[in-house]
Length: 305
Image: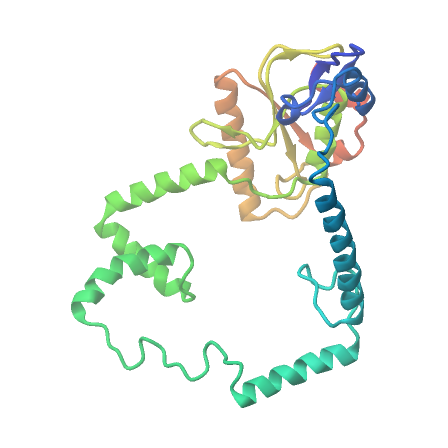
């Protein structure tokens, strides 16, 4: 997301922040926040500990110091394990051997019991009745969509038969998958091309949204969405979408990679989506991978003109 311009309450200088941190911020720096606290009294100013409670505080501090010294000595020697693990202290080979030998003796003597040893599974020598099988078949078929079965060919044949018999279930399943795809971000990490353009937009102080879902006939998540806005150097009158097309997956005419079936399908999808977006009033800008790699912030400004 793009950064928002704010004004410091003390020095009244401009500074930029992401929209998620706008509510908490009031000052541009730590110095300004410290200066604003000058003259404000603290909660414990003028308050004193009563004489009756002073000896208790002294005793508690002495005990705390003694306990901390003993614990530190035992952590270093290896007598006691720290609750957060080794806490920066490496265990020696002798200590590891002692622990392994003690565990082996515990299993042999019976002091330590393994969770699964000697226990019979609950479904051993049990057969499923025909009534339960009829109830479980539709559940197994639904689980097959999520990838619980390994034999994909057999599962695909069974699903085709099932959806031919129940076409209403297929329509419902497609709607659910479309709604799930709206929120899922694929890929999870942005490519180097997308990151470069996002950095250019932050330098220009433009507000943008990455991986926003566009509700059209062939809906998808765009790379960068820029709403209408005006800044010092750029004025955007239309809602613009920037697509960072890789030369391999989108069949660049200059680089000319090997043409394959899935790349040809991707090119057809791009043409259909650009038409649908232009009909709705969007401005679509498509940039190739080799163009972005050679691009500067000055050249990037020419894209909006």
